[in-house]
Structures are given as C-alpha cells and as structure tokens.
Length: 184
Image 1 (tube, rainbow, N blue to C red):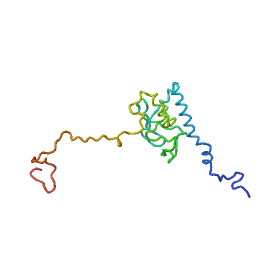
Image 2 (image 1 turned 30 degrees about the horizontal axis):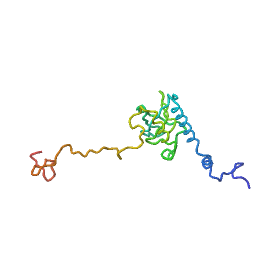
Image 3 (image 1 turned 90 degrees about the horizontal axis):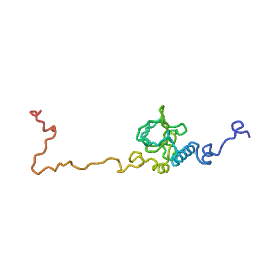
Image 4 (image 1 turned 45 degrees about the horizontal axis):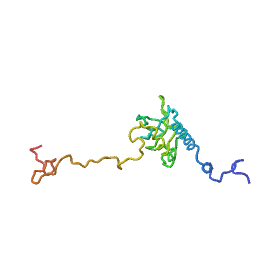
C-alpha cells in the first residue's frame, strides 16, 4: 500500500505539539526562562545590567504593546520582543509563562529609539530581585491590593448632626404637586 502523500509518512501520534511537550516545553518559554535566569545571576552577582531594568505591566494596549511602570517610577510604553508574542487565547492565559498580564513584572530594555520587553519574570524571580532594588516606589513589588476593591469609604457624616425634633425640614426642590408660581 502506498504512503498517503508521496514519500512522507503520516504522523498519527498527535503532531509536533505532542512531541514538543514530551521533550519538556516549547522553545519560547525555555528561551524566556534562560534569559531571566541569566538576568537574575547578573543582578545577584553584582554585575552592571545598565540597559536592562525591571518594570511592572500597568496597561495592555494590544498588538504586543503595553504601558509599564519602571523601578525608577517612570511610565514607559514598550513592545514585546518577537519570541514573547502570543496569539489570542495564549496571551490571555494565566498558565502561560510568557504571557504578560496586568501586574506582572518584565525585563525592559530602554533605548532612545524605543523600549522593548525582553523577558517575563515569574513570582519567584520577583521575590529574589525585590531586595536588590531598595529605591523602588513604595508598594511597587506588591502584587495584591489591600482592602478588597481599592476604595476607602468615608462613613463620617462630616460633623452634621441629626435634625432636632420640631425643627423645620430643609427646603428641597419643588415637587410637581407643590409648585408655587410666585416663587418661580
């Protein structure tokens, strides 16, 4: 019996994705992991990483662009490096190690002609790097918001006391059945 399409064998085992998963992950996440480990080794070793810095994702603009807050407190718009770009659902999946979500930390390369996100850090990397950036803005490395929804509700009545008994009620807007033509 001849093979299905010329001399090539048909892959009935599940395709490239299954083979890649058996080898231990995809190339993009492995490159990101290696780059982040090298960056961490340089920081902890005391080496100068001048063009690179850490930034937190503040706003996603789409098309691989985002607004970032750097460790120095500067707001920067940057694009993602080519091998970090994801398609549709993968870019929104929290399980994806290279997906930059709101509040996640990235390695940013700042330049005069345009900034670029070079790597996406995971939580354990951020916990280690936190102590090497003491000049970071207050609560910069906090990933959770305290107080639930982020609003501080003021329940103080501002010193206004309850109306006394027998006092006249304050006049409000006229109601349709209480319209006085002389006042208008």
